Image (cartoon, rainbow, N blue to C red; front, side, top):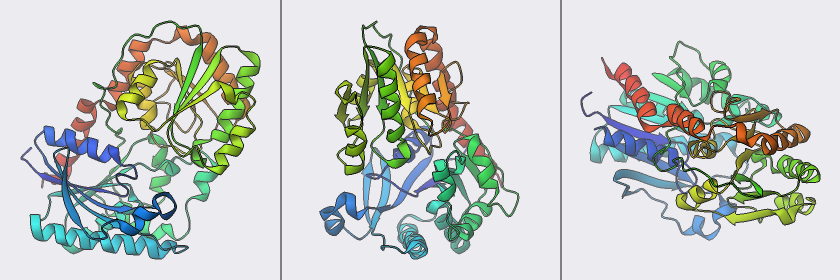
Length: 389
């Protein structure tokens, strides 16, 4: 392909997640594309407090890992769902107006999630005629829990319909998302599942040394959707039956009152270690020293933390929010969502049958799904299809 310019438009971005967008941009640039990121970042009041008041509430540019990033910050209005959607999208379009004045228009916009980068891309298309594709990351489209089902408010319908239906391509990260996405399509838009991209060279396989104790690792900060109120009771059941089983938890927000209550009811909290938030090297070290990965999520599309674990050769115990294409019987055990006993049974089964899993094969599986060459080749194929005319 000629060196097209791709503008990445994430619905959320650093420091509020969105590393997948930067990673994808870096790999596309390596393949000869000109890639920029336009990010209108929402900073939650409760989380950032003083920073919300002192952040530069105007657009500014920076070069981040070699990628031109056009950024501004947005403050939500309390209890104003529809107003927040329209205001964020309108401000994102204005941010694009300023970007276009300075750099010209891109050949293609790649929005990350229809909520609400995809809808903003639709508004930009109306104004400038620029085609866009949407990678849908939201786990709620997998519809694997009551929490996911309740997440689709009636006010969302129009925005989702217009955002999805006017895209040139929709790229879910999991097949599980497709049925719900199709409910919002009013036309014939091509849909193709492509994984998030993972640096499988960094999260690589190194043989693990046998240990006397068995350690599960969870790499997700505290949030209701992560199901720690399921994991900790399941861990208690495991400890009641098996000795020398431990749990290490990597992430932040475990100081929240809701989690402290869950922890206070855990009989084996002395066998749980909290590392806090870690840089990628720290995460890699933890994965290499663990025996199995566990995730108890209520909502998930395609967990990056699961892919990282698999890439290092770790088998996984997870809920059915994780697609079977990612974790099959060869990579671990999947259990129903919000089932404490089923999760505990799977964890115990993992402890006693850990040796049956082929770590090298698990790592190779992760590369075949999420490795840079696989993912970027598939994305380029879609770009070619959209831009061929």
